[in-house]
Length: 274
Image (cartoon, rainbow, N blue to C red; front, side, top):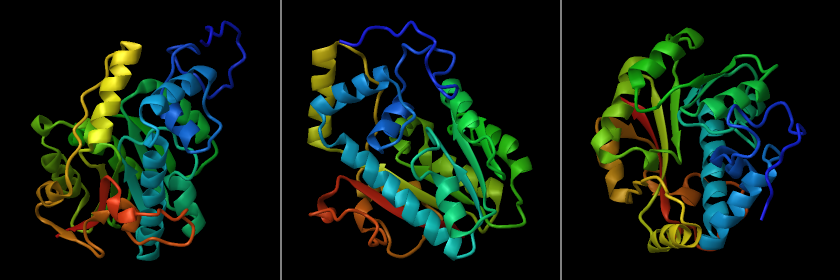
């Protein structure tokens, strides 16, 4: 077991106000993505997760690969502004890095409801022009947009990214209404990119196993089947290649080949506000 770290030896970007002994799932993701912005307690939690769900790191990396592909595609089609909802840590191929490689000068606004993640992320983004990080809840589009509008040029198209995050939004919060709220607030040329994990017996078993072994409560997850995409994006134009398993959305040579991409328990889609 990892003992609490009582030394003041952590880098300035982490941890946040909860202290160095508190793991953070945003840093766990960074660990799985091959980053460096994580601590011993984050790695310990990551190992507990993967003991119960060995496929989780692959799931996270597949969603991140979709983010890279969809941002690159959008920049090539003329989009230069991105609003990334529930971003987590802006590391390891996050939006500003991908967009800058494709076209320097893109504007990126990140959001996360965790003040610890927001504080650490602002430090990580120090020195990046045209990039901002908001501490905001994606379930409050009016508040998010009020804070984001001064940072964006609404005479130009904006892409809203909901990458591997809507499983935190319950049906009672009406994710379709939330996505429509962002599009309506940003204008008719708004794009919405979504990747979503599907219901999966392996995941259900893993969540139960984690709770049984570690006696720790878990948040409610709302995994949705591919058939829900049409409901979530009602009123949007679905762009090619449509709603597909995440590895099959415009695959390229950069990604590590998935042996059976059609069996991936998650879907991805790019849409445009009509």
